[in-house]
Length: 404
Image 1: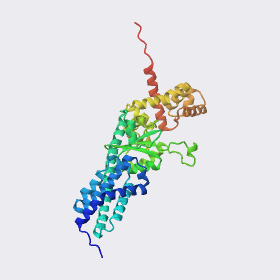
Image 2 (image 1 turned 90 degrees about the vertical axis):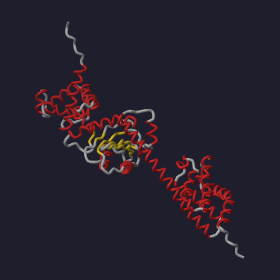
Image 3 (image 1 turned 30 degrees about the vertical axis):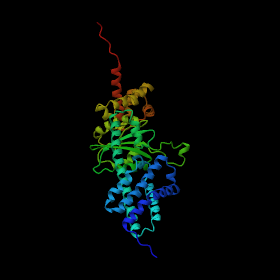
């Protein structure tokens, strides 16, 4: 004799009677089938259990009134503490929904076709609700990260550091280690920061990106700074230089000049590289054939003329002082060579030496400071260093008081 189908009121009363049983069976099934659930701390396991129980309770309420779908679905995840969204992934949440639905389906399989259809519809609504919750969390996290990243980049550009900067950098998930350099250019009309990040990851680098008006600032750090000859780097490609990284990032910038600051030891010192890059960016138009990207140190003469104290100090301490300390002979030869229009013969006549001697001394100059005086651009840099260095010597010489 066939059993008489339950009415909706009878089905609701029956579901409310077995809701506690369903919750208990669901928790046991979670323990048996989901390893990540069993590995959770008790407090988080309890929170997951609350979500499962809320899902069963809300299903009963939804079965009573399907028009309450939007509110019921929100209530399910409203039972979870905020930290649970950060510790349970979307994939794990969907596994939780699947297990809960399976337990309910097995227990109410004799409840009739309308009940089974209701379970399918409700599980779909819950799955969409879960995706919405995680999408909103990801969007909020993205907005927060963007604001935090802008704050960090502003701190680097201004040089105004505080004790919270390292923790802010860590919160952004910075993977850079060791040296850092800052790249400054113009922002394109349609800028996609994700493309810049993907390009940087492909080069084993990490970036912090800041857009300030029409200016785009990218702080670059190597994510894998291992030396090519180290044991750990066997079989890996050598790390790219910052200029090589900047060259590959160049297409992501807008038209105009692109300036790379010098390397610094770590991200906390990136303000020094940023100052050099910003100063170079401000005067790059003064070099008619400046490459793109151009190193900020290649713009030292223009920066010094614009009053950049860092450029003046760099010219003196990296060119003038090393030559002065190494050999006054090299310094004198360089002065003469530049004053004579880079003519070996004219320099040799002034110094009463053979042209080959001048050539040898210029080679020694290049070995000491790394710049080659025979190139037109580098000759300008060296002559600027000699002028500013001699001026600094004059300023440092104490003046004699007139005899009274």
